[in-house]
Image (cartoon, rainbow, N blue to C red; front, side):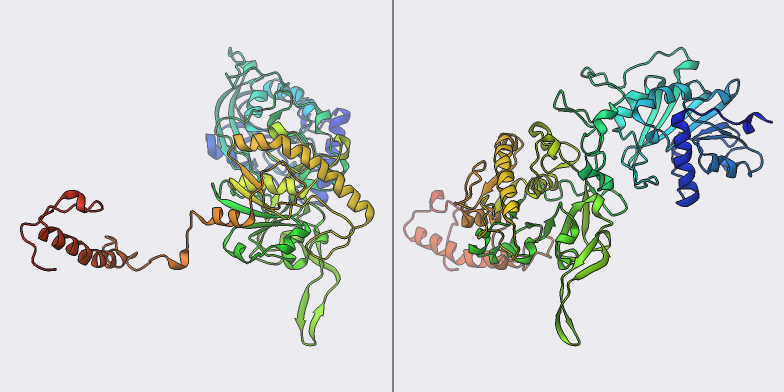
Length: 571
């Protein structure tokens, strides 16, 4: 029996990994990953003796004349061994003794490290560093996986920021070159085990009190987040050290906040830089307002708020079936929804015109959230912490019950408005006063228990917003409350008419502004000519009068100085 065919001695962890990925290869057509990206970034030679660590379906097999592949999946290795001219080992990356005595020009580990549990990263990277290769190439994805295992669990178990990955790799490797490509970190490194180099810190700034390998206990997922697959790692942001309350994101490193259905990043941050927005909550006081002037303002609503007023955006946190299908299907409304809800279906409550007249629908719909137009996904967390609230890489909407409870879409809305670049937010309908009689500005019932829970949440929000207000002001984020009877006192009061006027000051009155002459590059036609024609007779009249009075002083025309003429007869 050859070395590559020998039955591997896998650890208990590796045996479970074998089962997990073999299931995906057989039943889910698991994709090969982006294996070529790192080669394009740092270069290669077809003659390079290459070992592919975590080779999967051996997508690079035909790229190199000498190729060795290693994978934990017995199914993948069995299929790969049907390929001629290559060697494949069934092994896990924490035990690479099968490569002992061999040397390579290039060792590639692409789309693999993020699949390793945090507590095993050290031994895996130590084993990889002991592979005798002139160059090590790594391709690491820095976002949660869109794929799930057979039990619905995440495949990316170590989701770290790029700078953190460099710190982790720096223990066993000297970093030669790095690239950021989308959500992936590409690294060219050399093993310290085969050089005289000593480990160097990749960040020469502040001390590093947090451990290089995240504590797995800090990545536990609360039940309410587990149902939202893409939010599973949002509770503890890897970009923050809780004990310091400081961001540790690397220089020039970006963290996406908004996503498409497929998980592609949508670069919406700062899109409305410095602008004003109206945020309409669902209190009954909205019924007392004339909302017509808001047609000229940027407005965000909450939940079923578009039933009363359809603005530019709407945000939800609860199950999509609780909100009108007409909102989801309206392309003029940008819908912000937790990313994990993209595959959930709607409830069809539309009033539609049919051949029999208007017909009210009331039935489950097969339409999924992600199939609707103008839908934007975001990742959320359930642990409120004021000091990091404005800057953490997920959107907080309050506390999970294990942290004291209290969650609200209002928190998520304000954070998203800040991320979009708005710096002046005017609150409408934030009454913080619900009862059996005073529920919402749209038709909806509330049980006595629901009213009680809402009132308890209002009390928590009052405390949290009081903590956030000084941080808002420090960041130049100004929030005003336009309801004089609101029980939320954390933000200053501003009357609704004053808010409307303030929001429109920079724009003025577009219906009255001059446009004739705008196409003229010199801008000497249209309004400019009209203005000059009106000004000349008036100016000449002043000159004639002053000439008669022999008083041609410069200060007689403070707005426009023209040298005094020798003789003025007529205009």
